Length: 146
Image 1: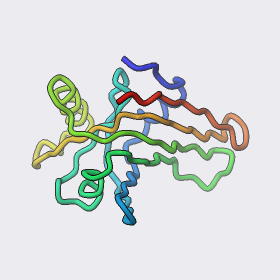
Image 2: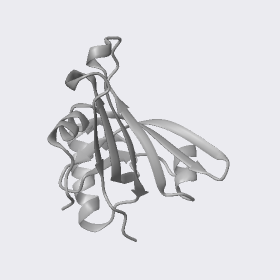
Image 3: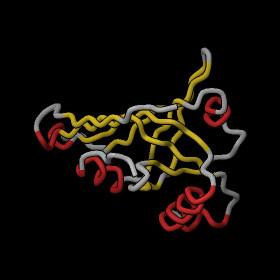
């Protein structure tokens, strides 16, 4: 189990379900919107994407990814959002089973299609939360170990 982020960050991640994922390799970048579930104990996001998608093709060459999860609002005082960095991979073993269960519970319709599950091991979370004061940010980081 990782040192978990502030509970306000965790609540925000759990409340939402769409991640904008950014991948890159060499001089090429790409973004994709992905439904996700969150494994709190592992502090990772779970999503599904086909192997031939542009974002997965780029991630297969560079497993460092970035993304954001945002609340859509026009009210400045309610702005909330997360910018994130992490390491993308295909889950294996026990993590694969946890990931599959988590994703299928959140998105039962996914059982009707072929699924290639991916996880993002979160390494940096920056939560902007204007409900705590204009421009208030909570930051969590995890030291990378290879």
